[in-house]
Length: 282
Image 1 (cartoon, rainbow, N blue to C red):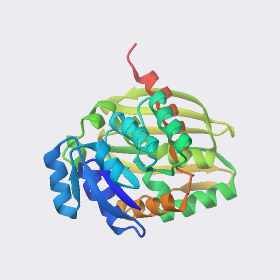
Image 2 (cartoon, rainbow, N blue to C red):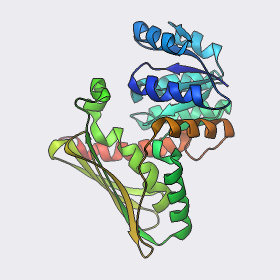
Image 3 (cartoon, one colour):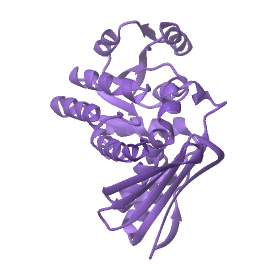
Image 4 (cartoon, rainbow, N blue to C red):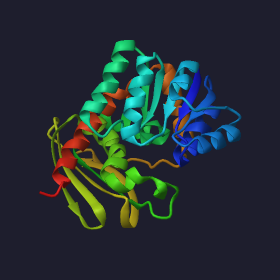
């Protein structure tokens, strides 16, 4: 499967591109970016062709891998799907339900495959934990505490992360783990605390209740997703190798795994939109 990479930032170059080169059955053939100079740099690094026109790239490949801000990703993903190209996307899928629905409609209309790279869902230890947790049951609730600070990291140059914060950047990771174990989310409320920390209270159709505490401007760093109930207490193993997880995700795409497709990503977007509405000053 010949892939075109849309995006030239750190995540695109260091994770998506590296995984496309390493994954069996895939070929990284081309790159497009909003900055032609950066596209040329990525192309030179990987020995691929840079494109100035995104539609020309889409026409030349079988699939696209997109590592761009969500408001840029969604319309390009819909465009590629309408052209019959398979999709390897990043989270969040979009910033609005309408934009996410457009991607879903394009995928459904053409029947292309899609995988959204919720990183933990392709980390083998985490996958094993989730399978066991679902099979065991008996969970009353869960908590996701994902705190960090992008200042001084490769993601510091990402304006959308600064603008939309932890809810939109790491919130999708939390939801991708909470939902499979506790079930569909039926209720959402949220509040904003110090250091741009968003805390959301989630009710699930199973009756369980979970929380997410998320920030990209925190003075402390932690990554913890845990569940509790009659089955005891269990924590999801963290990701240690993002490129390896991306390779697994690409294998899921070529294998037709739909557990993290655009439909699931659309539902995650809907939860984030509901939480974000509570964070807007009134």
